[in-house]
Length: 270
Image (tube, rainbow, N blue to C red; front, side):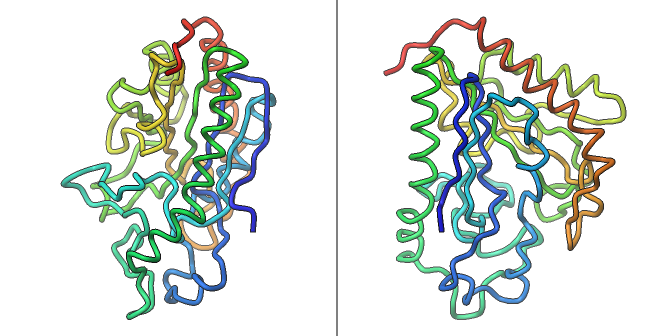
């Protein structure tokens, strides 16, 4: 299997999709239990939702499932949200805290090391290469990290998640102009709710690559799945009406980011 799919564009915007992949190699799939095999925690249809919204954007998409290894976690295994419930680099449970591996077949430290080399590093090598290429073209690059999650996950958060969850690690990962524009578009989108740096402040991708002083900006968008799925349960089908209502808002966000990027000061790459 190809670990990563890349579409190269000439825009300063790069769309990253670390969690839409559903490929699980047979040697790993054989160790999942019945619950794990359902792959519930996929970012279902997100790459389809964004398709064509910014035609000249670069896209970098992991094809492997996050249960294999999570491409949006620190490779060291350090938690992104200390003190809060979360899932790890190679998850042992799903978002409902249910075990996903057959008893006795849970991933070992050797498995984690092998999957880092086999999946995590190649994905990020590809993303890094596109950041370098786009920065060489424009003097700037904006990584827009695309995510989704069920609006209700009691193990991870209380209550109902807002529709748009914008993460910039409290303003550290992108220029304030980008943060403000995205927050304003979401706040003014009729019929939707939004939050800036709420439960999700940006995963490892956003925090690792977002270095505005170098010309690389990053922002994460975590969409509540109710905004575009027919139901937040199996079979997790895309709802065409909800998607068609949401896509123009996402297009406005990406267009605004691309326009702002052309006017931002160019960074100094190390």
